[in-house]
Structures are given as C-alpha cells and as structure tokens.
Length: 380
Image 1 (tube, rainbow, N blue to C red):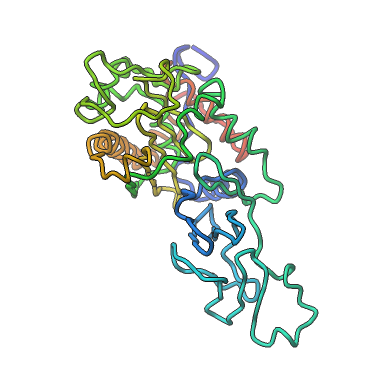
Image 2 (image 1 turned 60 degrees about the vertical axis):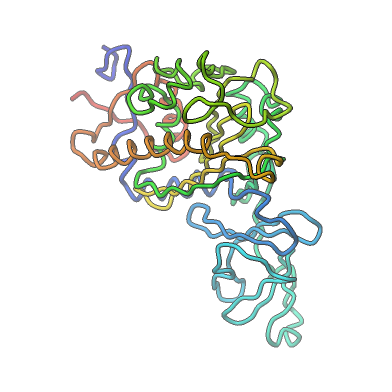
C-alpha cells in the first residue's frame, strides 16, 4: 500500500466535489478558461470583412469580427457606455460598424468608437479609449483562438507545446494542412456532464473495448485499453483488413497530400488544454471544442474537416462522420452516467486510476495547480 492507502498500481482521482461544486467551477472559469488560450471558432466562419460571431468564453461573451485589413479582431461583447451586450446574435454580418441597440453607441470593425448621440458635444471622449475592449487573438490550424488574460501566456509554450508533447514535433500536425481543410459536417452536442469527465474520457481507452465496438474494429489495438495519446508520437494503426477510418472500415476519401507514409493508416489523438481535442487520420481531421456552461453541462462543437475538393464536390462523407459521431455519443452517454455519482457520498474522496490511465493523474495535478485546490484522499 502507498501513503494514500491505495495499491501501488492505482492512483487517486479528483474528489467528487470537483465535478459538482459551483465554487470550484467558478475558479475554473476564472483561472482556466478566462486565463488560457481558448479555441473559439473556425476562421472560415468569418469569411469577409464585417462577418462576426459571438462566443462564450468562461463567464464572458466575446465578439469576433473580420476587420477591413483581413485580420480577425476580438473584443469583449460589452458596450462601453452602460454595459449593454453589443451583439445579441450568435453570428451575422455588418457593413461597417456595430451599433449598440440601447443608446446607439457605434463601433468600427477595429473597435474604435465612431459615433454616438451627441458625441460631438463630448470632445474629451477618446475614440480609442472608449472603444471596445480588445481581447488577444491568434489564428492557428484554421481556427480563431482568444485569450482574455491581460497578460496572455505564450501561444507557442502553451497551445503548440501541448501538440508537441503529444506528437513529438509541430511538423507532424502541419502535414495535415488543417488550416486549408473545409468543414464537411458540424455536430453540436449538449452533454449533461462536467467538462473534466469529457476530457478524462477522451484521454483514456480503458473503456474502448466496452463501449466502442465500431472504433475497436477499425483500431484493434484500442481493445487492449491503451489510448493513442498514452505514448508520445504513437498513432494507433488501422486493422489489416480496414480500408479507411469509416464506420464499416470501407474505403475513405482523398488522402491529405502532406500526410507521410509513416502517418498513413494511423490515428492520432491530441488533447490541447483546456478545451480542444484533435483527431488526425489520413483523409480528414476531427476537432472538438468544449464550451463549459455549468458545473454539470458542457456544449461540444465537433467539426469534420476534409480537403476542399471533397466538400466542394459533394462527396459522401457520411461513413466517416458516422464512425466518430457514434464514438462521441457513446462517450458522452458514459460521461452523463458518471455525473450523478460525483455527488454520491461514496465518491466524496474520488475514485482510482489504473496504470493505463495514470496520465489522467497528470491532468488532475495540472488542474489543481491552476485553481489552487489540493488532493485530499483519506483511507476509507
């Protein structure tokens, strides 16, 4: 037995209150989602100047907009006059400016205050000083990432570092040309579970043989319980009789040109903290973005990305979409089965992780460090 009272092969999980306590969720919103780089939207959703989308990041609403110079700008979706929400639509397009529906304060695509009733009588009001409050923004892999922190962490040392830690180098993901792929399908899932349950599930494959029959048919090694991301640089190999990453193992679509022979017929899974999953296969990329909205509810947007010719040509992507849609639904159902037990007195001190799940313990340690909580598992 270890000092925790557990056998050497087991380590403790987070206690149950980390999945049910509103105060812990508030700390996560503040110190994780509002402090780290957050993957907000696909850049193609902001196709031309004036296109916008609003996104909830932690407890804040963020306005993303394509500016006149072609760059993406991000702002707090809050009017500087009396705090009204500036844009109430999820997405849309404006010609030249955003106007607050309350008192008509108007802001350019660059965030500057350009007009307001009687503004000429207030010459001391600075157009930039009283413009929209900017949010740090970065485009990578064809997505718009934002960070609400006043002093954002290095994108390279956080987001890109998570990819390198999984694949061994950044070139491995660049070969999939994710920024030039197009959305062939998007499915939005409303999961009645804490966001951490979803991350923990994605990080391990101890459950794969139990609930993912279609996935283990395509990736037989997953039946042994070791997830692809358990090993740095390792990709799970397709079964010998499997032609493509599809629900029935049938032939997939056009292979992404940059994918190497070594990467062909393999599946790679990457967790980018705090809310992104990237799945790489030879002919498409599947990217999940989580939006935690309550301690027991998480919205997940999942994009299936293909070569432009596949999407523009109207090729049938249904078999590849169906495979991971089934995997998603199986996973989310499992998470929803776990959520009620997080408030059980039996789970007050948490559960345990087997050896193939020990890397989840590293995620728990990282989270406790960020939000300032400690493990507290006493012997039962």
